Length: 385
Image: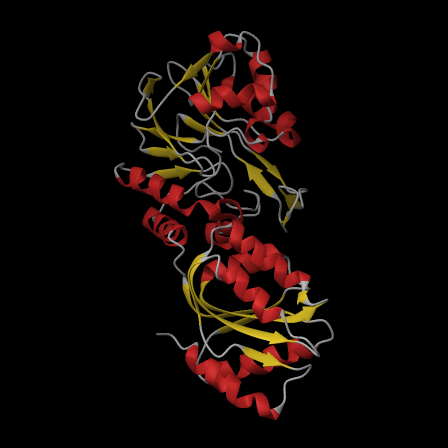
């Protein structure tokens, strides 16, 4: 695939990988993106996961022809992008490696490179590297989402090599639109580092960008304001949609029935509602929905005197993703000693700017007619302000 006459895509699809980072389910795999810039000097932009090394080697050597790369630009050291550094440094012993000072310190942890000290060229904020008619300008992007990360702007073609920023799940061959997988990827992979993503967006705003080339997912070439606008919103922990997400954890079905009945009542009031059974859906999907919607009602049964594990798992993930800025409601169920609301509140109070509305609803085993007024009151409290 050509990005332009001088910039070639040499990435690899991995349709068989079902768990990203051994925890996030993927229906259509993922891509490991790598690029080559052909000029008086040649730069290879990142490598690929070891699962794709053989295919990547073939693509890279075909693009290079009888030439050799002068530079390998290492934007991110995570193994799905640095996993083929060992091969390329052995294959081309005169090639220099370009990366941040933190990359220089981290790289020997992953791979041994012969004559490493003489081959590594450390770059910092605003440094430039001329390839001929193309010039690479580097910008540091620490904690998007590792500390060594940088992005690279190619000045002549106005291309931003964005590392994991703007990345998605899904293979290139699947042809899925960027938005189909982008929030799922962002919320679960980058989501904790909203402030860092904001810092990167501020740097990007000073550049005239015509293409964005991430390390996962499709190359972005049109309507860049749309993608940048969503990334800006997500990294500010601002909801994308108005509506109520209702994740629930139910053992015997009574909490589920109460939630689904309440969802219908909310819909009759004109609300968009998205219930989700946390025992049936992966927690990464629930985290995505929390990032998407402006209001959330958490509903869980008490289990062994504490919170049911599926709900505990979701709230734990939200905490570690630095989730914030939502209006939330709480519904608990308990047959003799309800504790779920207390435990949910403890998690939510650790998050920033979480408005916990009243009433907190307690049902005893099953929802009854006598609970109707409390549900009506919660529905009123959860209305869009």
